[in-house]
Image 1 (spheres, rainbow, N blue to C red):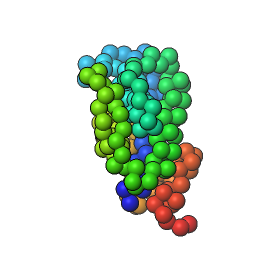
Image 2: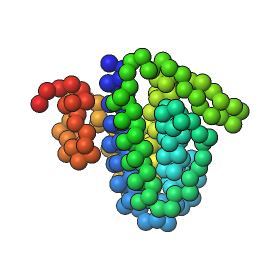
Image 3: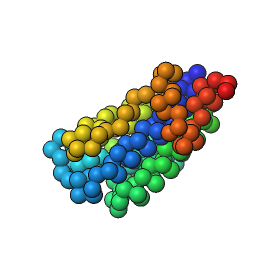
Length: 183
């Protein structure tokens, strides 16, 4: 069950990032990059870049290819968006292949103070919480910028499935297969 839930969270992450970046594309570049006093990292643009850079940091470690955290100077939203899609798909693929016994294995996180060993499951949970935390901030920054923020909390309840069906299908996410529900 744990690996199913992790895969569901990875799929939700893909869908949420898709919706968030689509809303961000409605902003002019100057508004996306404009300093905002309430913004973590100074602007919505910097927040989006941080979110992706942290995803990549943890994914490398989860794939046993640890590398130090690095801020990337993303040139534009199209490039950042393509990299986010690749990162999201990499996370889905990782969660799809996970066996329960792998969840307790230790991975290495390179920190400034030196390498730290963490359990794979705890690292994945940390990654999902980090994503949710910053997407919530991006949601508020979009609203402050005059763009209607996307609905991001309709993934797990069965009653909301019709609201997301077409979008998930376009992203290649088969919710029935994910939850083990026969068509």
